[in-house]
Image 1 (spheres, helix red, strand yellow):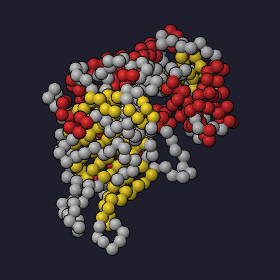
Image 2 (image 1 turned 180 degrees about the vertical axis):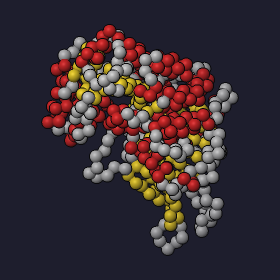
Image 3 (image 1 turned 90 degrees about the vertical axis):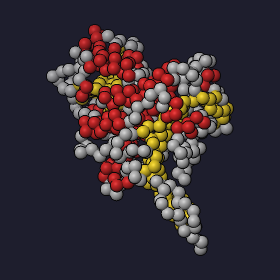
Image 4 (image 1 turned 90 degrees about the horizontal axis):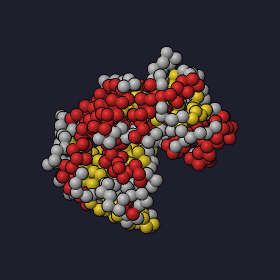
Length: 480
């Protein structure tokens, strides 16, 4: 890694402070990136020393005390470089003069600047070189609809080859997400059950107790559908529904995800109303604290129609999943925080010895707050009577004494090593927007349904459910 460089465009911003530098520090601390040369690039006219002090303060704030070691912290910050410049090709040429070898460019910039930055890098001669490889990492969102995504693709492809563009989604770097593929495809007992004959429904949920916080300007133009469902939850959906790959090759994995999206029954003006729901939070109480309505949040227009909750039902038109609904939902200011993929198996056909119907089994991949795999099963109650109860078999991923890596640590190492498996190819982005464009068009009129902060979300989400199905309660912290 001695000739490998990371150049962060937007190095003075929030993303760099909160996520990138803490992840890079932890990798350095663990010995993975001791030889990686990191250069910050931003418009602020700072000295190298000022930038280092800025990052050192960020590490004190965003890395917990037990992970800070003075020796490694000093060593890490001492190796940082900084270049002042704008997103103009002429000024970016300074990067080429000071940084030699293979370079990973990370666009830690506001989304409207992605295209301009990618083009300027290319025009400065930094997209191709004989000195080593060049790669470009782009944060979400990749466009705001199909037309804008295609426009951004054209900008980027004017200077960068698709195989060198890494569209990052931090959900794909989570241990639980990656273990979903391993668990599915490395355990023979599961494959015979992973189809419509045995699975009744799949729920992919990501409720949050937080409001818009400091993201008001971005969020009010994005909304829950663009912010969460089009990227994070769509990726989890693809990994759950995809066919077993013939190999673990990055292109094969991404081909299979695109196959899932192409097989989804598309929305139209008639089906949007019964397959999609939206809501906006009003004032309420979370953790015994009163919180304001969305329209009362700082920076939000008083007449905003932006949805803070979105839910939809996907139907897949193929042999494996015919008739199995996939429910996706995410919302802010809800009753609790968690992310999970919950698979409900069909009921056994015979009644239990006490005459009651056996409850459905669930297999739950919990992404946060604690990463774990849970199996909800039925067992006999202890005692003389032949009675049953629900038991939860839990396998936590975290093990005492084993080093845990954050999603950004994993994805940064993948990007440096050229492993594209956990990054989005453009056709994945394209097909996700193809599916959601009719929803965005329908939502240009009307208003989201109100739901109280701290609640389960808007009642209209229940209209998406197939007969006999119900949402797993948001307030539920155990897996029963």
